[in-house]
Image 1 (cartoon, one colour):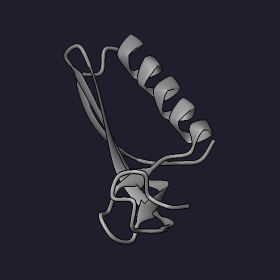
Image 2 (image 1 turned 120 degrees about the vertical axis):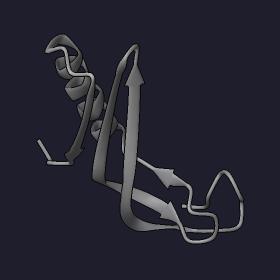
Image 3 (image 1 turned 180 degrees about the horizontal axis):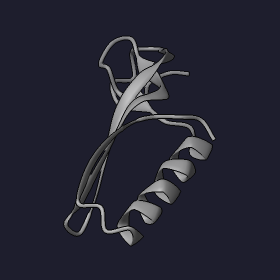
Length: 75
């Protein structure tokens, strides 16, 4: 797919680090599957993966997590 940010690069399979902040909580996911622009580095995470990350963040917030760094694991 053509990058919507730089409009020049093509996206290729790669990984991203996603940081989610909610109130006082910061949750970092490493090695998240993503499409990455080969020109500018913009990262695109699939909708299903985004939903999984948000669900995990909800669970972490309910558990009282303040700061956590996790390696992505597919559901």
